[in-house]
Amino acid sequence: MNVGLLQTRKYIRRVGPIQSQQPILGVGVPLKDAEVARLRLIKSNLIYFHKKPIKTQDFVYFPITDPKQIPKLLSDFSFKFQVWEFPSRSEHEPIIETLREEFPNVDWEVISLKFDQLGEIAVLKLDPSCTSLSFRQRVGELILSRSSRLKTVVNKSDFIKGAERVYPIEYLAGEKVWQSWHQEYGVFIFVDLERAYFNPRLAEEHHRVAMSVISGDIILDMFTGVGSFALHCAKESPCTIVAIDINPHAIHALQRSIKRNKLRGNIHPIIGDSRNILKLKGYFNRIIINLPQESVKHLPYAARLLKKGGIITFYQFISKSEKPEEQIRNLISTELANINSYKELYIKIGRAVSPSRVQVNVDLQLV
Ligand SMILES: C[S@@+](CC[C@H](N)C(=O)[O-])C[C@H]1O[C@@H](n2cnc3c(N)ncnc32)[C@H](O)[C@@H]1O
Image 1 (cartoon, rainbow, N blue to C red):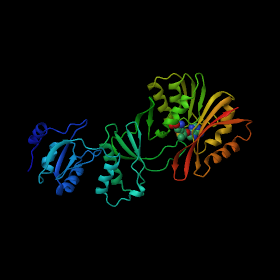
Image 2: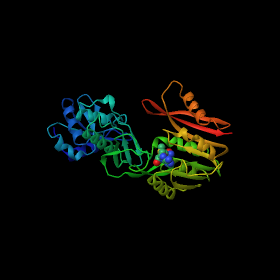
Image 3: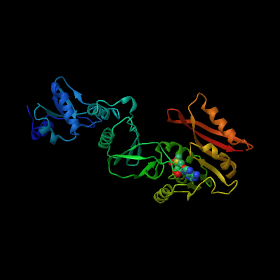
Image 4: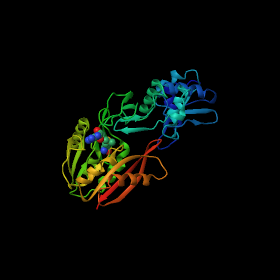
């Protein structure tokens, strides 16, 4: 039996769909034809990837996006339509399933489909030495097709390079746009992916630091990037922040964000090398050092700029070891050997940044 579309619509209304909060139209095909039908539906991008098919005694029902195309696509099968409450799949399962069909030789051991979302841009990290460009582009298309919030999918195609910490981008799918507004805890951050560093995984730290700022604090953000720490702090408290970055594009992005947010504090963005731009002594209540491959090296300079009782918040990569706290304490005591007294307020072994390195988050107080 080949059910036409008009008939089908009537069928849905008359027989009545299964009532549920999120009913979706499904197309059912006899069990013996299910596999072929599934492949055709996938190829034509007609399946809702985030839902699992439903199997009855004789039929398999696939959740579909556009019934108009079905009569032609499945004309050789006895298909029928019915509305179901299809169960949800885990996030990437449907994409992986599709890719397994289309790229049977891919080594899934070395592939992760996790991506960072920067505003409307998804950033994947697929190693070009393990995947073909057509595979990466297909991943991009599939991710895009499953999200109404994304406009662009790109790949971090290589490691971060240079003082500006910008990574090379490979375009995969969607609009060719590298700038976007990202939101963290109600703070708007202008992201310029191609030209300035930004990492959405630091959102919690941006927020944690902002929550500990006291009204009237004078803060230095030595490696501000697009100004995430500065924006969070100024949104939260009436404080003053000097935000420095050597990359003019990062500072231009920060200037746009300052205009967009309703801030309680004042941010002074400066383009420059923060290692020697300030000659002040004992001036700041708080200094943020986020250049994690070498932050500890800047501790002596920061300690000179800090008021007594002031806090240095810094982020440092260290090698994965049995005793990461000991490792970071040794590094601190070497760098601050000439400083009379400091107190450790907070140490957190944070995210793994590579198989061999982790990031440590530290607050030190000068006493
Ligand atoms: C890890 S990113 C900062 C990220 C930012 N704090 C955030 O949370 O989004 C490091 C930044 O330091 C800047 N940078 C590197 N060397 C610098 C220097 N000598 N003086 C000022 N900025 C520098 C880079 O341009 C980059 O934007």
